[in-house]
Length: 225
Ligand code: DX5
Ligand code: ZN
Image (cartoon, rainbow, N blue to C red; front, side, top):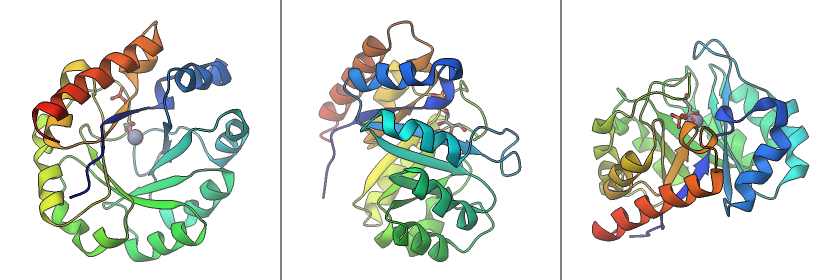
């Protein structure tokens, strides 16, 4: 089975939007290679964040991979604008009222890497038909919509379930990641840890990232992951 060493993807949602360039540079200088971008449409979730123009304007500032998490009702409509704006990975929710195969086709045809997301209460079995085509799967450990919520630990069994189902791509966890929960998630098999508040809420972003990474990597080693 393919194994990845755990890495941290800071979520720009928790950054200071009045100084985005500096906020992006701070995590890139800390060695981050994947930046998580939370897109909310005010319909699929009760909050609105940003759209393709913002992604396009920050794209030239960094070489980091843009991991775009679409919390939108119509991912088929928005996949292409985000890919054109510079999103490298694009994920959408199994709970969105769409035909997942068509959305995956669209993301791939735009040159981006497709991922799917499940909410805390959604079983992963619904992802089975799409596993062979997905670059990553994102497991929500909070209900989507806002940063700074408390980690729901009982989602962690989903990583082993997905590996048992034969999924070999990246396994991402999103919501409530801190030093303690990063270890729990990494031990359970998560290899990409999205962290909003625990990175951008910290004074020293580099230290916050290094500490989360160390907690996750030592937990993954103990579990043999
Ligand atoms: C929640 C978003 C998360 C969020 C994580 O809807 O998908 O990516 O920004 O933030 P924290 O790490 O603060 O829970
Ligand atoms: Zn997210």
